[in-house]
Length: 233
Image 1 (cartoon, helix red, strand yellow):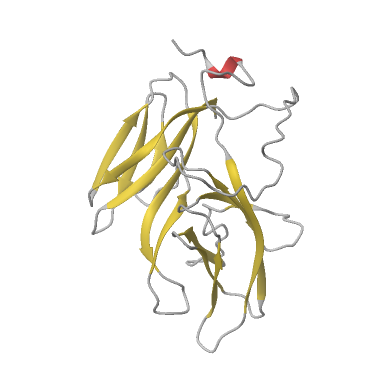
Image 2: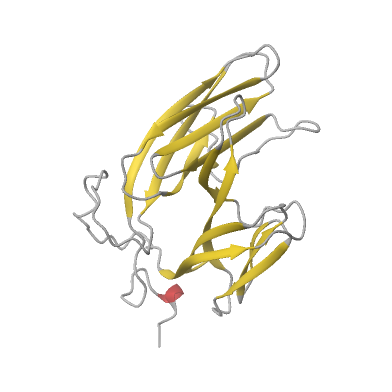
């Protein structure tokens, strides 16, 4: 029987998720004739579609900083001051952004990728120092309890049981068919999902003491990928 992950900084009962790639980049969004939007694509060179995490900011010092899954952080009316689309496909990181300011705005991104838990092939470790692991008792290390993929038909919800008896930390990503805000190009990307961010009962990812719920309010089926950690929120 697995140990209670909350009682340990590190335990062999739970694997540690592996970060294998990182990138810092920026995107300057000009003032356009009709709206302010821009996009960019950056090759990641990985042999799999990255499960990305990270932060973005309106300042180079990342103060304030927003999770990549937080795509509309500030409203001053009926529409967001800023909106981003970010995700990955098999070859590129895709970023698009829009703002309502009267002057150009530069956004900054720090992006990392987990090694997908179901990936068993070779890869180049671009972090450089991840194999020189040194345990530091000052830090708690994330402990992966469960991971997987779940398909959710349109206008329905599905749940994954964890049975931990407390609310665990969860990371989730969704397959999305979208595109840059300033072009008619179509992107099929894996995008991070903001847990607990709802537009309605069917929308988003929510977590309780026994399950993780995945909702799909859209007109087409979708697929989520997830990591459930033994660490409590």
